[in-house]
Image (cartoon, rainbow, N blue to C red; front, side):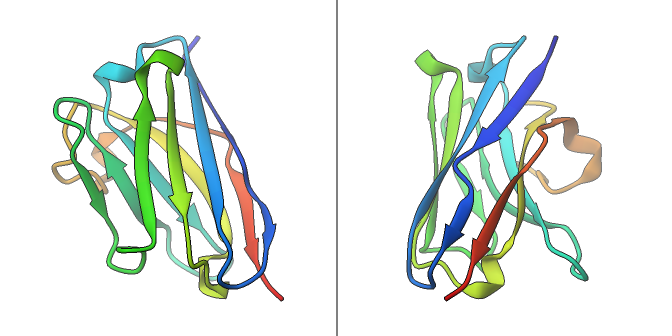
Length: 126
């Protein structure tokens, strides 16, 4: 059974850091691109980051560039999202998503979504 399980969310002060993990089972994560998306109340879903499998390329939303970094550990079948310099507007539920295909081309298109995790809450507040 294909599953994605996120962890690492929590409450952090502005300027702080968190590292989200996405553990995959039922498939070999090495052969899939993985996206991170977030949803906040009253806001549209936002694609945050993509990490491709073919060459490890990454792509980021403008709102997080320079602050967030995606990575993968194929040996652990896990991807990570390192989030630094967090802002209150980063508050959301974060989901990792297995994408169809290996690249980050048009990765925010719903046609690329293959499987969603259950999400992890990130709250940035003082």
